[in-house]
Image (tube, rainbow, N blue to C red; front, side):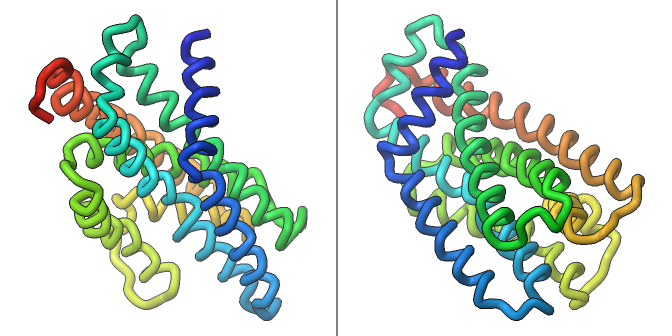
Length: 235
C-alpha cells in the first residue's frame, strides 16, 4: 500500500515537474516525423526513434528529479519516516518506466497501428527503461550539479549508442553483445521482423541481468551518497 501511494505521488510529481509535458511534446513530434517518412524507411526510423529517445529518457530525467529533491532537502524528512530506500527507488523507476511504455505504445499505435508485434517492442521498452533509469539514478545521487550529471551521463550514452553501428551495418563486433542496449535493439527490431527464440532469450536474459546489476549499484550509491548524509550539512 505504501509503495502504491509512493508510485501515485511520483506520477503526479512527473506532471508537476512538467516531465509529462515534455514527453507529450516529444511524442507528438516523433509521430509527425514518422508520418513524414517514406514507407520504405518507416520501420528503420521507428526503431531508431524508440531506441534513441523514449527508452532512454528516464536516464536523463531521473537526474533532474534526484538533484531537485537533494536541493530541496527532501531526503532529510522522507527517510525519517518508515518509508524505505528500496521503496523510493522502485517508485521512481516504476513511474518513469510506466511513462516510457505509454509513450512507446502511443508512437507505435499512431504510426504503424497493429501491423507489428507490439508486445515484443513494449517488452524491450519496459526492461530497457528500468535499466536506464536505475543506471541514471546511480549517477545522479553522486553528482553535485545538473551540469555534472549531464556531462557524465553523456559519456555513458556514447557507449550505450554504440550498438547502433551494428544495426546500421557500419561496424560489427561480438563485444556489442555485452552492452545492454544491444539487447534493447534486438527486442525493438523484433517487433518489426521475426527474431529467433535464442535471440529473444538472449535479449531478455541480458536485460534482466543488467537490471539486477544496476539495482545493486543504485542501492549502494543511494545509501552511500544520500542515506549516510541525512541530517548532515554535507551533500
